[in-house]
Image (cartoon, rainbow, N blue to C red; front, side, top):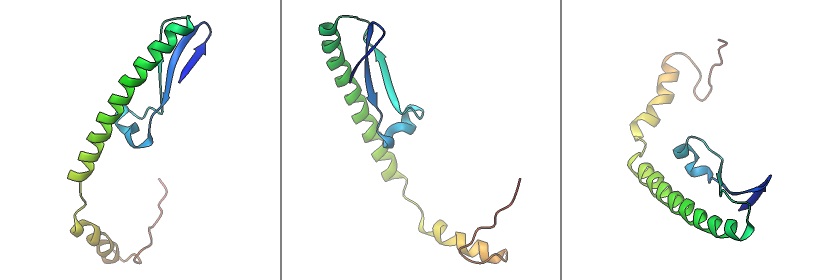
Length: 99
C-alpha cells in the first residue's frame, strides 16, 4: 500500500501472522520510497511489493518445512498427564503458584 507521510511516500504492508516470528515479531513493514513524486512512488511501490511478496513466499515455505520436520512425539504428549498425577495433582488441572 502506498502511504504519504509528510512529503515522502512509503510502501506499507501488514505481515501475515504465520511468518511474524520469522521476522522478529514485526506486524508491519514500512519502507521509504524516497520520493515526493506520486508517479515515481507508484512504480517504486509496485517494485517493493513484488520484492516483499517474494520474501513472504520464501518465509512461508520455510515455516511450512519447519512445521513438517517438527512433528510432536506421541510419547511426550501422553506422558504429561501421568507425571501430574504422580505428584498428587488431579488430572487435567494445573496448580497456580505465585512468584
